[in-house]
Length: 140
Image 1: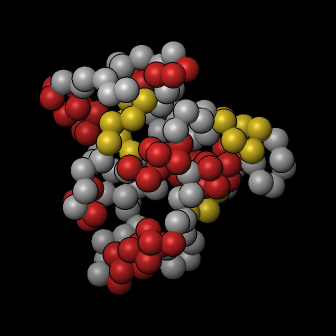
Image 2: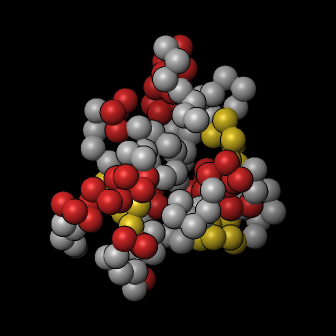
Image 3: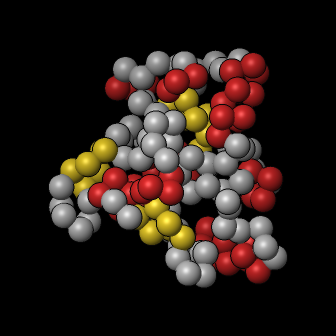
């Protein structure tokens, strides 16, 4: 199912998100691939198509997330909420590895999100390493 999102609403969401995926922080100008508007609470779970429930995500993060809103923290085994880019601060839940190529979960939410959305998928890590070499990564 594809819900219509007006150009005005999409523009607001792009500005809110800074043209970056809310999860892996990939910048669409680096990838050359437009980001998707995703429902933070999926429509299938009653999420509305409103600015408060929409954010940008790259296609892989959006697809891996699917209808999930929770996942297991690999450290504790407890089920926790996934990271919510509109309500939570990325740097409180994640940090970059020393070389800037890997996202490390700092909290149960961060760790669960890294695993569930595969934020360190091989191709993306390779791209990040190249972005680091030219000074485009990690983002501020």
